[in-house]
Length: 95
Length: 95
Picture: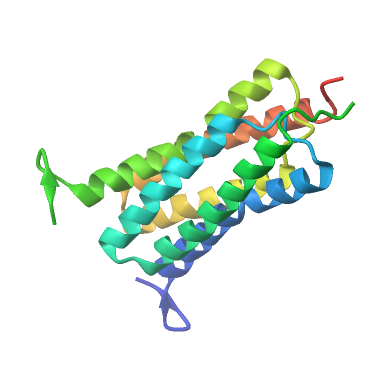
């Protein structure tokens, strides 16, 4: 496998992929906190995501794969915060 | 490692995790198509997600990991569709 600065390319791509997908909910959280509106955000999406992320953490623990554990623990915290925002602003619309 | 019906527990958890996180955007797509409103959905979230999912597919191809490839190709299609919905309904609000 090719290497860059002593790292496997696949490791770099995997960690970058994990960081991007973990960070993807952040812009939504920022937008929701700013606008105080979340009536259009799907609560089912957040619940399914939290379930999936929890399983990724379990998978990471079983495989002893630290990048998977860390990126998904971060992701879980962001999504719990988003769930709180959704609950708080669930009835708000931009009228 | 423990086994259930001949499968490694870690494999089952990994595939379940992949399917859930890949399917998580579906409820958002359904809600958006029904309500024809997407002004509160973050376009940056969708772009970052598409970038992350694309890297996961690259990672899956390098590792020859079929569950990672399949769940993320599915996820990519759902997110491109969501990007289309966001563009179509970007100015709509529930007035």
